[in-house]
Amino acid sequence: MYLLGYDIGSSAIKGAIIEASTQQVIASSHYPTSEMEMLSKQDGWAEQDPELWWRHLKTLTSKLLSTSYIDPTEIKGIGIAYQMHGLVLIDKDQRVLRPAIIWCDSRAVEIGNKAKKDLDKSSFYPSYLNGPGNFTASKLSWVKQNESEIYKQVDKFLLPGDYIAMKLTGEVKTTLSGLSEGILWNFKKHQPGFELLEYFGIEKNKLATLCESFEVQGKINESAASETGLAIGTPITYRAGDQPNNALSLGVFKPGQLAGSGGTSGVVYAIMDQLNYDEEERINSFAHINHTETENRIGALLCINGAGIQYAWLKNQIAEKGISYEDMEQQIQQIPIGSDGLQIIPFGNGAERMLGNKNIGAQILNLQFNKHKQVHLFRAGLEGIAFSFVYGINILKKLGVKVNTLKVGRDNLFQSKIFSQTIASLTDVDIEIIETNGAIGAAKAAGIGIEYYKNMEEAFSANKILAVFKPQKNDAYKIAYLNWENELENILKRNK
Image 1 (cartoon, rainbow, N blue to C red):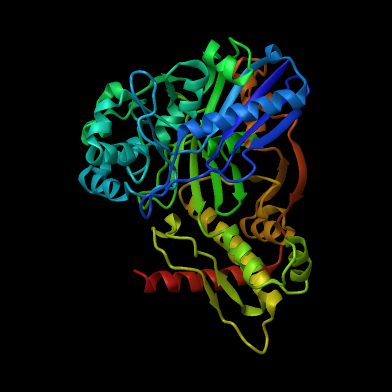
Image 2 (spheres, one colour):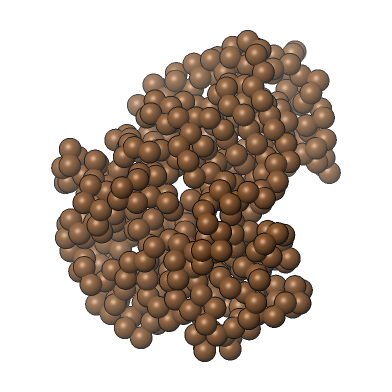
């Protein structure tokens, strides 16, 4: 018996097949091998053709089936993870009406800002846990205001994962977790956000049918079976946005547990058992995949734009040609904690939400020509990213988030011992490096949806811990961080 998981990203579609009883990965791959095309007709716009996701998913599925040599009828559940906050519009015949407006598109910022001013904060935030922001509801309002002829044809609006599930099953559905990521879930009333829809003038009947994150959400129909090679009747039993799914993949689903990633941008995703929110919107709170009316499970999302992109810049622009990140790590070990006073502020990848949406740029501070060398820049760069994670985690703590463990995958900045050790020591939290990815997590979650696994603990019990970083008692970490934080606060004051 096998389970299949997909992760629908904006760069590629990932997939994995696991054997359910052993949780062994039978096949894992992604497609295409180069990044998917992103359309940007104007500055700040980011769109993709949903049909492109579907075509690549079909190619990937064929690849997974051919390399695994399994009978498709032995796949008993399919899970779908997807890029959050996107907007796909379909007509009554399930045809896509325009390119999807994806997560990094910023065209609806002013619409969200106006809504934030117009709406009553005292009632809106406790109910929705966020301002409307540049999320799915605001993007849909933009279409209504600027593309009225297209809007008139809209039968339903979907998230990217909803669209893929529809292509596989013909069923037009969404989830509570999905609606919350679009700021379309009222937590106090435990129902869709009809008040925000009314404010934007969006008809209720444009909402897709609500289903649970874990249940049979539809079955592979004849058309999809013909196009993918999957068996007719195979159930879709799980779907979730990429960050909740990444957390679940790492075994993060209880209060006190955090998931992290350190790629081009950095993410910390914490589980809370209270309906906490941040009116400054440095942190966004969404329904985690196991949130219910009677048991709160809220995912508090911290996003840092200027993370790995800064370290990659140092490698590409400052380091010798051909040097690897492993080489840089070896060199950095020569330099003491705190980089002999050299500091780098890493926020050079656009406006930072956790800094109040300020775009302060990356900055190199306290450079001494007679003291600092190339390797000091490497260490200060890596420390600056680690310090930004610590800064964000401290915001989470102030919001009442319990912090016991931080679990991360192996394919990002956390591979660096210096990076991970710095964060562990400053937050007093164990960091566990887990061998998994989003597609594998979605496959395991599909096993919960068919009730093969009795709970989340069982589904992710086989997660392999590759390394653990424990806090070190060393005042040098604290001194270096406090100096960095003081410089950051001075910069923020100047940018008010």
